[in-house]
Image (cartoon, rainbow, N blue to C red; front, side):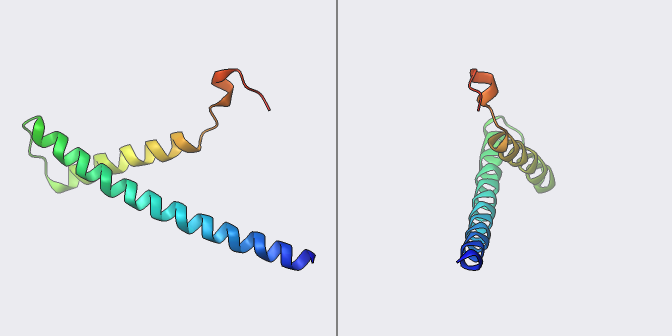
Length: 78
């Protein structure tokens, strides 16, 4: 059963990677909308390139911050 267990782990890892990729793409599109709406509320009309660049930076920061272990800040150690 060792081969089937490792094959199941591989399939679950692939599925998890696909789900995380989909969530990252959805997060990026939501961030584009938020940046564009925020710029409109502030009275700015940036071009699409700047909206996409700033949304990409914000989405990347959110993804990296979500993947960073923050337990050391709370005094919790493994």
